[in-house]
Image (cartoon, rainbow, N blue to C red; front, top):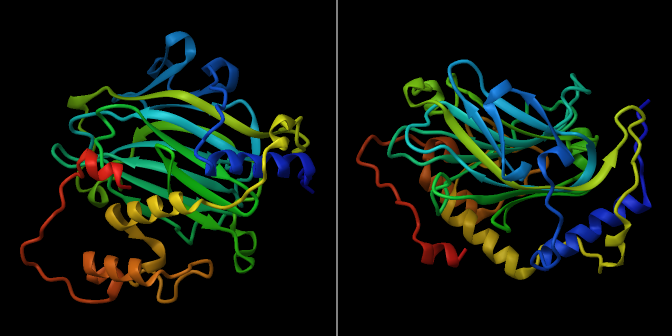
Length: 335
């Protein structure tokens, strides 16, 4: 039977981390070099280190994609990277920054995902978050978003905060999704130690318009750049699955496990302006929303107007559609 460290030090660490983040990321967290925290996962020469190991380039070409993985398993913590995505035609390309234990728990794995889905020229990258617990892959918990910036123009920070009671996704320190554990979920909430992964690969069969547009290797290599790599959590022994020494210096911080009103306002603004899909409102997929869903009537109404078939059970009209362009920097400042 698997043993998990319960307790005091890891719980305090995670709660203390929360107080740092909800107070505006006021305390600097150490950034690791590649050799300090990661190993190459696959891709041979398609993984290249830069800036003395402080930055990593992952590339996809006709031969292979590439990826890296954390040296340690973690049970809760904060995990982050600044990422710059490939530009130009990127249909079919998938860049992923995620946590998983699928290599250890093949039939009941946990997973917490950021997935970046490429697009044809002139169309924006889309970002998807997803969560699996205890092998519950039959219940997809996806949300999908547009962005107020071009993620191929410059680096932006993408972060995952994972505790025993909630998961929060951040973009540039703005919370974009909060997923709370509920009693009704049972084991579907990620609760086993996981490694952190970053990969780039060919997802032509599904990533862009359900596989309509595929990777075109005329534009290869596709290069995703990673820097400011952060692994800040409770490391777990891979054999015993027991916690190693946790960072007890955080324990003196004021404990808090809430999103501040200011952060809540920014998250609500982001979701109102940029969320294009949420599984809880998908009427074609779930006649009854999954048990952990808390329905927000305003979100439900907005998504129903955006896509009446998926989110409202209505009939699609084939008239002219109006698309919102990318938001300006001034709009970003209001998120």
